[in-house]
Image 1 (cartoon, rainbow, N blue to C red):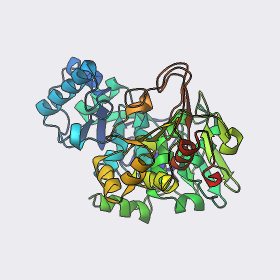
Image 2: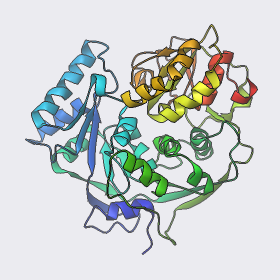
Image 3: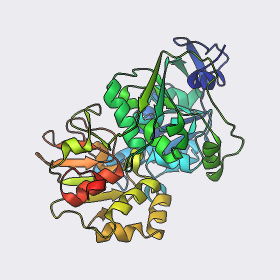
Amino acid sequence: MPNTLAEKILQAHTDDDASEAGRIVRCRVSLVLANDITAPLAIKSFRAMGAKRVFDRDRVALVCDHFTPNKDIDSAEQVKVVREFAHEMGVTHYYEGGNVGVEHALLPELGLVGPNDIVVGADSHTCTYGGLGAFATGMGSTDIAGAMALGETWFKVPPTIRVAYEGKLEPFVGGKDLILHLIGKIGVSGALYRALEFHGAVIDALSIEGRMTMANMAIEAGGKVGLFPADEKTLAYCAAAGRTGDKPLKADAGAVYEQDLTLSVAGMQPQVACPHLPDNVRGVDELKGLRVDQAVIGSCTNGRIEDLREAAAILKGRKAHKNVRLIVLPATPKIWRQAMDEGLFSIFLDAGAVVGPPTCGPCLGGHMGILAGGERCIATTNRNFRGRMGSLESEVYLSSPAVAAASAIAGELLHPGKL
């Protein structure tokens, strides 16, 4: 029977029949992930279960990316719990302080995730790894505790929505715009417990970083996973990260899809998600003149080197508006160093930006860029719920790095081509 990408990956990890949407299957996992917010809950459940050891110390990753260096006593206590557990269990992949990066940028960079893997994480944006052809999804901390102990978990095989993009991308339009456009079309529950499977010449031409940006926001449409075929571009990325043995992966011809969408990118403007939901999407020109107080470039969605280069190309030789706080957060230490070595930091600093350490930081209203009441932020992050980045009376607009950089310069939302 022809299978979708989701069905093929699940079938490779189970002895049950994963060939049809709706079936319940028990799967062996490739990697289990938690961070400094979610791991303490998982550890508490792990101990309550009576578990003594993790199933494989090399296949559990604990990444303290939300609040390290510790911002306060509470965060220090959270990280201490994770650190002590990692040491007790001999967890190989424990990251904190100088070696930590935003988890969903760090793990691909380290070669810990890739094609045909099943990855479960106590973080909703674990779906990022679908950009590499992995069935990767977020789960609750109790389920993660079970996976850490057993090395397996259960899934209901999701129906799949096939999404194809056709046409030619306009300047300053990329992966972030493609996924925002889709979410704007189908809504935040349009893919609820569905797999989103991406296809078409536009997708084939997209960089791996662009694909991970799109997979990252599958959850913003309610998706269980966002999946891309693993092509030669994918295999080259994974090989560069030190992985061996990966093979191409694509859906079978004749696979059954719940829905088949084709979206045209012809004439598409850079997209912006307006408050207070990621599906409130408009073309940037519709928002021209809307004042901003802060611009954030970073996060697991758009904090990779390609994103920083995109922002730097806009900012070079220009200054951020005097009333805008521009914050740049490279997603990993490697990206941080690469941006520094390429001279991007000089561009950011000359533009008046604050360049911070690799951290989730302001994305979740954690630290390093909290908004006051009445303030408005343009951000390359993935969520803009009310109060997400600070005050309940603040507003967050989501965009690509190019739009965020252009808006920082103008002091208002602006198409990069209009500078």
